[in-house]
Length: 256
Image (cartoon, rainbow, N blue to C red; front, side, top):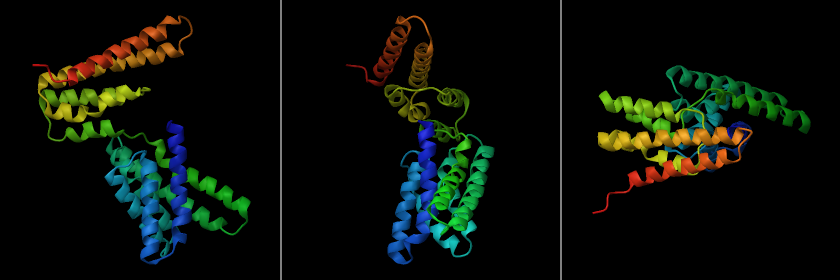
């Protein structure tokens, strides 16, 4: 899934660099370019979020405006803005800087490559586009948080004491590499709000239930990879289903 995301993101980046400058000027061209940037930014982030879409529109306009001065400048600004939302979701300040630096360097080189081989025949142009796409995908080398982890990080601001410790634990658990089921992801979806606003008792119970579900999901993943007992995957799957059911029970208000 990650490989597909990177492939699509690379295609989105090179599309903006190669096609947006040819969309013309004027209001119509600007609107078309901004629309292309919005779609490209959503693909790069992997989801539609307001900050990504706004930066995507700016990215296309930057490619057009920057190209009037320098094709390298336009490419650098465009790809940096396309990855702007990912830079916000980097796991550290250093990670955010690296995402931006790689985007800037990759965008500049990709734009230069596209310009250099334009008009040299279809084979060379396609080869240049493939290499340019790989260059625009360089920022994907830096890991970033998904929306749940990013939401937990945002709630950390100004939080102290036990609640902050609980948020940090949830963030560490969420960042673990794990193939999560749709149901487990749904259970995670409301956690940033619950951990920041719910009572200590409710937040503690939900986090413990989620940690148990994560362990069950990890056991299921390990069991599916193991060679041996056919009952192991079934038992692990049943355990995960039970933990998810417990989370749903916690989410339901008590009956009167």
